[in-house]
Image (cartoon, rainbow, N blue to C red):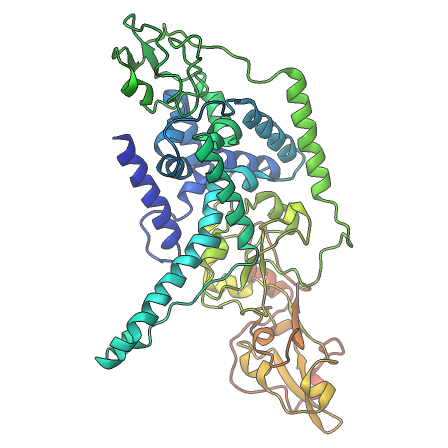
Length: 514
């Protein structure tokens, strides 16, 4: 029964990631991420907000009060993968300590209290989601395309044109190797010590364990127990003291049933009885708690330091609908969901170039691709509202930035050559031409540019584009209407009328339109 439920939840988790761009899913694709009390609690603490996305996490905490760490044994997809890929028993001499995960939890709480959200670096659901989105999903698409290539000769022979020309856009993510390395290390550790992550490192397990100490359903050991110790080593979370097998460490027990299966006397059951010997081991000493909290505060301070200019670089663009930068960093859990669903693959993760606080946060890279103006998926899958869910009309007015022509690189400005590509690609006719020195020179009408980046993507100049999008002029709101904000700034995002209405009227240009 347990393995069946594990497989069901694992398939559901992978299906939601794979189908997250599907418009009519009956289940929210970010459900698993929102169900993590660690993500919900620390993101809310860091941003000083309480939102509706907390409700699934509250349900998971309620289950911990009823049945301990049952989430770890039956629902967590990372735990399921550890069970499927690891040894069923821990090797002799393996590390059995449970303290590190509570120290990590303390450090994360302290950092969140200081306004820095490190949750995505340690939460198991965010960690696995990011690994699947950055590594497994692109590899699966590569496999599909290789299969299509193998079938193409036969499809051409039988004139199956739809199959002969079929191709799935291949996503590629910067720094995918880092996510792959981290998850690989965890599975290697799992081979030497089964469920090592869950037992020793997982802060979500630590949080659930604190609530599990008050759980109603507990492991019961009858008088038939002979203290043989057969149940001690098989326990994946080491919840049974080796010298007192009749007792249970309530904060570690996940009610997985492993001990009951191996008991030669059938002395183990699970029930609501209160008179159960429970091991009351202290989780942390006061000194350890203070040290962990201090480490979290120190990490929060260091995360905001950068060896470079501390100002945000002009080329760092956030996805449309991103809340203001400070709040965005406090809310974002670095799960990669927005980057997974991006149809043009223009959303890419930051690595260490902007410090630890920005690690794995999404950035828009127009040179790779523009932001599809008919797409609003990134906001629909964000589990913490770091990216707001917008309608298409609102998204069009969520100005990402403003394009700027680098005249020294532009073929028209620098070499007097004819080029119309940026103008042809702009969906809002924000790039037009005016006569100067006998040539039609491109200029950007700033109040019509919403920063979509198609001009930068299609610029024919090799290397860095001759027209780049900076975050200058961006509109980022925690709440309220983007349409109204754009109207107040007198911005015009009407679609391209397919003409250059300003071309013969240069007097309508202002000095800053350049």
